[in-house]
Image 1 (tube, rainbow, N blue to C red):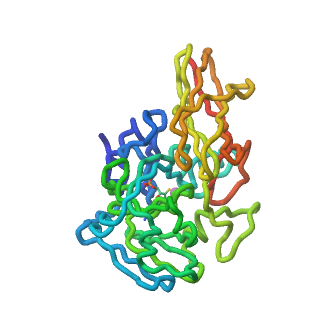
Image 2: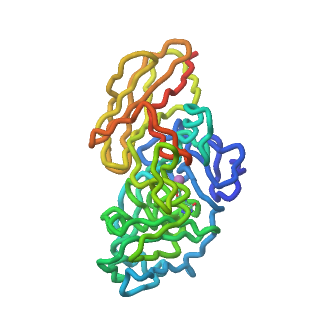
Image 3: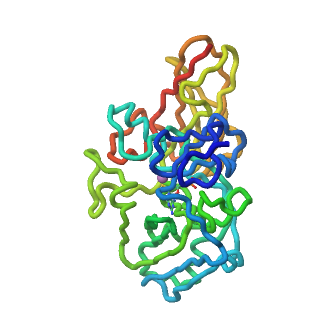
Length: 356
Ligand SMILES: Nc1nc2c(c(=O)[nH]1)N[C@H]1C(S)=C(S)[C@@H](COP(=O)(O)O)O[C@H]1N2
Ligand SMILES: [Mo]
């Protein structure tokens, strides 16, 4: 196995990952065509890190919980967190920049950031302590407004959450991922998992949680991970609209320009919505009308549902389109307006497939 991706700890073989040609950051995309079960194994989960994976020793690690929105600031060590009530939940993490490369295709201009295709998403079973339980133990007050989790990586990645989201049932300080302690690349010893929100909310390598009675701002909710550009109003001090919930999206388990033999195939994929369960997935091959794909249990809100359909593939070039609808009736659109940071591209994708 090769690991030519600077800063990532785990092996990133080409069979499991799409590795960017010039990796200035520590990013690898999951190769969806190689996925099998419902959950994304830790070894295959995409990595999006703004800094190299830090090496943290759990025995001298502390989580510092402080700020003017608390009456009893505190410090917890790893053992103290493990001693608190643990809950488990299955949730997706999707980067707000997933599918960013398609802006370049549609608008003839690259949006700033990693040029992901659709593999910057994964689903795992996370377990750990509710953030709410920690905040309550620290005496969070009625006047608390924003909660700022801060990472221990080089540039201290940090992005605030409103207190209400921080207190939600399914906002977790995760200590495990798919039954193992968190791998270094995914935030060991502790990370946040913020259900339904953009991946950037799920701070890895947590070192600090600040609770403030004031609105908080960092680079990552004012100059990045915002919807900014001609179609979006600035919300000073942010250059656009800070992103929260991820919209309905689908991915197909085929490589880009996949080649298949002629004959009958089952095409598969997954569909996700940050706003709840996916209700429907449709497919269209070439100029054919839309048909319903079959959904396969489980269908977990805030995670994804697997879909499949049978396809009689005839020789030649084809285009496969997938369109998901969530329980609120939100459908993947035909196009997404340009935004400067290339976020939230959830338009229907025309996936090229060559049948031999
Ligand atoms: N401390 C820290 N947390 C972080 C990041 C980071 O660079 N540093 N990247 C964020 C972004 S942009 C995403 S999409 C997710 C990716 O999580 P993963 O690497 O476990 O897949 O982590 C988030 N948490
Ligand atoms: Mo991200």
